[in-house]
Length: 201
Length: 421
Figure (cartoon, rainbow over the protein chains, first blue to last red):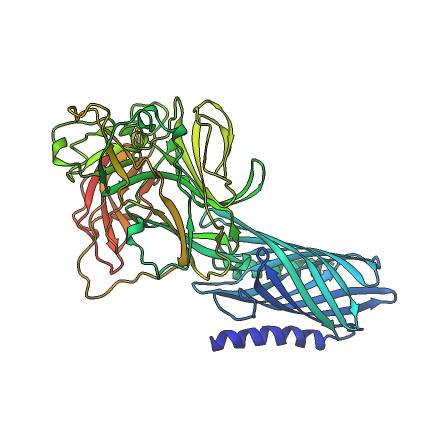
């Protein structure tokens, strides 16, 4: 277990290190958020995410927005690595330049451990964000995770309210998952609510 | 730009090569649910965390004519069956969304061979682990529903041109009082070749007291959403009907039993849903108004509560073997091989032994395997059927079927053989 925790620490700190050492970058606000997923209603899964935005000035007037998400997720409302935990990192690039719209396409990986097996997926997330108000952002996220024996696709629809008290925000929404294992030849699905709290630095 | 795309492609390729492992269903908030079946008399009250009781169906308006209160004679015997075999097709847990609408999750899949359904025989007197490793959301469910094949007689569709051949085996085995020796009763199945236990077997269709007319009793639902016990399509007519397992056309009949609570597995880490069919005094013999004639006596399920089914949820206890255990579990019974049109299909009944774990099948061409190292292992699971799709047409295959207990002991095994069609 100790080596897995060390791996988690390296993955999380590695992402931050990468972000901190980038040249010509204009770092804005780092976000730290804690989310509880209820499948469907009772909190059963918890996740902590660090989101590091990076702005790369390629030439005058042209900025490439990149963000790096690193997370820890556990099948426990209290972040305990019981029967499942996962650490992951995904760098994403914003494909839209409109002020209120953002569309991030990412590519990353994770380390998932259950009580029986270890899995390392290829992760391809697509996140659309729309901020109609200064204190409201709507998010649609599809995270595709390709494993050696199947795929998981997670759809998240959420509203992010904030900043509140200058730095804090609340995320409310729902999550739906579809999993397919070509090895075992079966589909599974789940759905639930999510509630997140976060702050910006 | 080209350079960036090349790098991106390389990264994707690298990550795809690195990606490995099974899909972690726990990420979906899933629980690894197992479903077992046992007769109620086997349970200890302190063992279960939660119990869901189905209310009794006592209204005999749905009963066959000879079993209605007004027409039946007197109760002669109450018997506890020693074998209660049901061919279970599907099992689902479900939530009711509205009238005629269900969100269901199948925990036991129907097995369809290349040429027809392959029923799975389960002896519910002891069928530990009907299903293992079925993933469901950690949630509350309104109920559980199952489809089974009732089996009027010991059926084989071998002669059919469309099916590879299968046996329907929903039967109940009971020891009758001596006075019935030499008397064949209505609904009794006699097959000396297959039934050697000394029990007397009756078809489920005959024993269950619901009148089905031209239809067949095939669905059972236990749910907290069920307002009162009722029978769907009691006339057995062809029509559209809906239940948590499926929405289709047919002349099937479904029984709905109300339960007092929902199936709530949200607080269980590794839940096991135990389906309990109480065998105590389940079979009754009634006089048909002719006290001097035993041959027309009616053998039926208990008329005051013909479907004594309930559910219990518990944390799954891991069954482990012991190094001091050197006794293998019993062999499978009523094994059959079929498959006249395509592949070889094997069916059997798992033994009742408490420590039965799984079945191993060794296949060998042209002669019977002398032991488990003499041939190729083609199957290892607890599900009581196997469709061999890997053989070559025209080859005479021999299959050694052995049971394996939790201590790793193998039974002597039985051999089935057939030329692959």
